[in-house]
Length: 66
Image 1 (cartoon, rainbow, N blue to C red):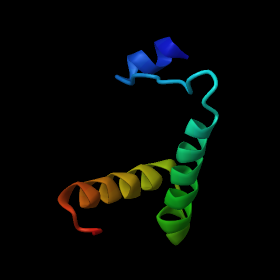
Image 2: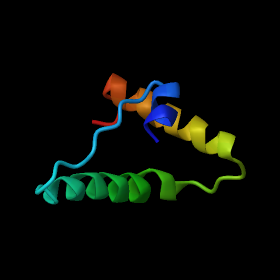
Image 3: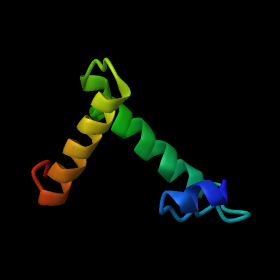
Image 4: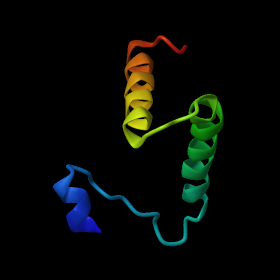
């Protein structure tokens, strides 16, 4: 998995031993993003998903969603 992440320019960080609450932050983000962003659309292809994600990311970067 580490090699796959590196090939896409990702740095994999794992939950620290003895800190299970760290996972709750990621699960909360995933649920919120899915409910407030992705559930608003009906996708016909994976390329549409990536286009929407990129658009949302750019809008967040510009502060348009604040």
